[in-house]
Image (cartoon, rainbow, N blue to C red; front, side, top):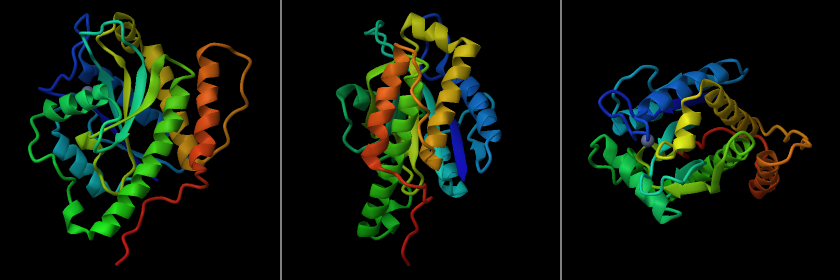
Length: 263
Ligand SMILES: [Zn+2]
């Protein structure tokens, strides 16, 4: 099982800039390093990062790397920003959709896709070469798996941090367009919100976020049963409620890996 961890932005592309000047690319890199270390400790998982330093990678290069590696899962890490709504805060998890789940999700994907000046982002690489019906089946399989992982990650994140009222979103993110690698994009919080920015710059908070993501991935990949609910109140209960709803929805069974194209 190979997981690719993608730290958003990097190099000449700083991503969003926080209220006190913190750059998204630094947050995503710090989170990616931690997530790679977290996955490294797990049996049965191999992990590769698209970048582990401050380098520029286009979205096309990232997607090509994911396709070349034949990865079983992509987790792209980002931090959001919406300066016109500085009170908005919370984490969220995106999967791919040609039609965005909300106007805000569409705005987000548009901004991210434009960030590195990639061109020709209308089609996923290789998609046109595959027979349409197979493409559509693969797309459905990949989407189902992506949503399963996104639900598990969102549920775990809700136990350690504030998440958006609807933390599961979908939009047409370029980096999520692999046809056969389930892909999710995690927005760790809003850099345009002072409290979220402070938390994202806090090493302990970042550790909690990353461990939550790793737990979500583990649960989705290996279909391990949810832990018994604790007596704690607040965000933990919200998270458990999400977990309880999320698990039966797709009734995953064991992770069967990537779809195989019929010859
Ligand atoms: Zn970003």
